[in-house]
Structure formats: structure tokens, C-alpha cells
Length: 127
Image (tube, rainbow, N blue to C red; front, side):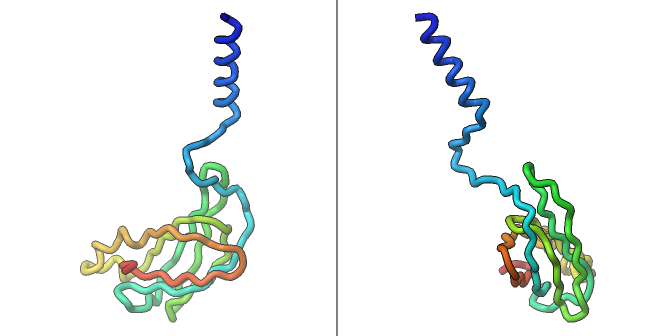
């Protein structure tokens, strides 16, 4: 009887060590495949003509460098970043204006980058 209890405990310990996850959480991407991203940035419906956009793609299983893209005078940007979910951070003069300070939180958005060429048109506020 003692062996049976010990064997059950050993099986449970192996289950924990194997890292089996039945939480229903999606798998964390580990790929470093890159894709092109093109798009525009608007604040309150008007194209931004300055600033930067940062793609932050790091996660617990994928240590990658942030990608920084310049926002051009016509409101467009182009970047090459890692496929998968990432956080996009916008920094521009328009968000520093007094009437737009409440939009600072909307300057950080989560997006998913697909393989190939992506079109990403960022609106602040997003609605």
C-alpha cells in the first residue's frame, strides 16, 4: 500500500515537472520570423506628422529587441518586426498637448503581426 501511494505522488511530481498546462491559455510564441508592417497614425482623426512608433515583441519565451519606426510627415510608417502579438507604443507631439493628455493610455495598444505584409492603421483614441 505504501508503494502505491508513493507511485501516485511520483506520477503527480512528473506531471508538474513536464510543464503540462491545462489552463486553456494560448501558447507563447517563440518564433523570430519577421514581417513588414506599413500603416498610419492618427490622433483625434488627424494624421500625425512626427514622432515614433515602437514595436515591443518580447515575452517570457522570446527575447527580442524593440523595433523603432519613424512616423513620416504624411502620417505613415514602415517597420520590420517579429510575427505575433506585440505592444505598440506611440510617441508624438500631439499626445503632449494639454487637450490630449487623457489619450496617453491609448498610445499603447496590443496588435498581432501576421506573416507577410501587414497594414496597421493606428487611431488614438481607438474608437
